[in-house]
Image 1 (cartoon, rainbow, N blue to C red):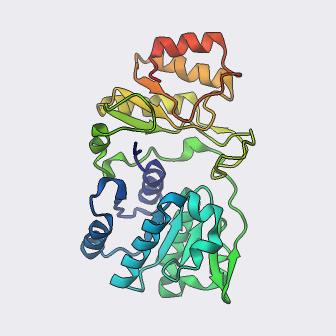
Image 2 (cartoon, rainbow, N blue to C red; image 1 turned 30 degrees about the horizontal axis):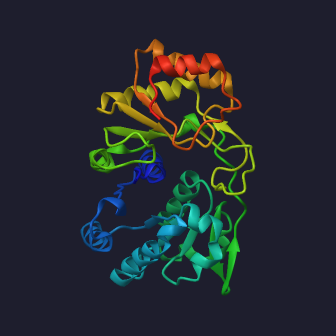
Length: 289
């Protein structure tokens, strides 16, 4: 199945809120010919910056996208982010079409970098400027250099809700998703980030400290998504039920507000932490797979 680009929608929302930027999101997963769609989008929008998010499995397409941007106009800054550059920035920066890579969580890093590009113009790539932006990888004197790691976002409630209006999200309602719940109208959501367990196969994007949104913020976003027409919500957290009382409060607030989306947890919850009363609450709200 495919899944909406929630990370990009968070970053887009931050760029709009903090920089009053005009943002366009192109989801390659929705395009029959992604590079063709990208070329026409670049011609139409003439962007000041292009950000490309990539998993390792999609790296070939991400580098193809970077090439398409630079072929159109070599002066457009291309910044890559997401799991692939975060795990191997040196490999990504070997591509001369990639100017910089955002490591780990992207909202603050990319917003700060776009602000720098806007204020500095063509001189934005000076290493001394890039060193001052935490969470970046870039090339200086022919070598890959990392700035100071970006501290994880402590207050997730301070982030704006994802910019769902920037994609045709109903297209996702006609295809399979991460959950095994079949084809149906749904949205995705993060209620927390990070996980303290150290499973070797897991990503490192959100770090090893559990950071949670408030139950109130989650209930408010749920209400908005239900209003937008989705009966199902897939919670993508790595460990949604790490703090059991917070997990319960989240579900209680949904019940108090009369919200009964069918919840799925495709990244799983931990059964060894799950308590019986939480299972009762889940049942009362409504749960899929």
